[in-house]
Structure formats: C-alpha cells, structure tokens
Image (cartoon, rainbow, N blue to C red):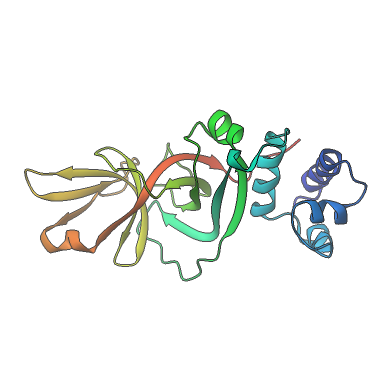
Length: 207
C-alpha cells in the first residue's frame, strides 16, 4: 500500500463528495461503511480508483441516458506473450459518463469490457499491467488490435487475415515475440472476443 498516495486520494474523495469521513465516501461509491476500514489497512483497489476517476471527471450530474457501463474484470488478463488462462471472471459494473468516454478515453459512447494486459509483447502500444477497453460488438478488420481466445488462452494481438494463403496471423508489436499463425482447422479454435478501443494505466495517480 502506498500510504501517502492513498491519503491524498482519500482527501480528494472527501472534498469531491463534500463529506467528512471515509465511511461516507464508501457509501457514496456504493460500498458498505465498513469498507473504509479495509481501505485504510490495505489501500484502494484498482476498481475503486477507476470508479472515482470516472465520477470525478463527470462533475455535472447527467441523465441516465448519458451513462454507460464498463464491466471491469479485475482478475482477468489478456496475455501479451504466450497466453493467459482465466478461471475467475467476476466483474464490477462501473457507470461512466459520456464526457469521460468521449473526451478522456476518446472512444464512442457505449458499454464496454475492461481487462488487464499481462506481458510485454504489445509494447509500445500496451505495457504490462495496463487496462484495455474492449468493444465486444465491433467489426474486426485487418490491422485491428483484438482480444483473442485460442483453446482457452486469451491474448491481445494485432489481427491479420491472409485470404490468399487461407491463414490468420496474430502478431505482436514487440519483435522479440513470434507470430501466432493459424491454418485450416486451427482457425476453428480461434474466437475473437472483441476489438481493443483504447488502453490506459490502471495505476493512475490522482492528486
């Protein structure tokens, strides 16, 4: 736990909600008052930081039609290396305002999934530990960065379809890593989960 950084965030939260205690902050964020004790002893989770960041960006209360949801899978990773197995897929719903999506994240206003990147094969686009926003409904085209499932392993890669050689190539941006090439029946094992719309560092500093 980064005591000094969390203390700063705690004060920002109290000022934002115009309350005097961390217990009141917990209630405003939709948690039980007892959650404040956990924050003091163990620090803030990534989910709480992201939730507060989105709320503090949208300072003006908006109608419901101007709120979309991010499904944040804190324990799900897409490997930027050799594949990541994910057994736990619990998620938190984080309401996000139109302004935060369109002006800060620079993405279309709609619902998305958010997962973490594991590994360094997609550097410089995505670093180990970054969060990526995934569009489950987007049409995937050649050259898009995608989240792909191959036999249960989840990857973040650049998608390339070669219609002449009838193969699909999932490439890394870091030249240290080899491409994943799927041919014939191997392509049937591939499931494109979604297109990556943007990435950001989940360990953001809030002053």
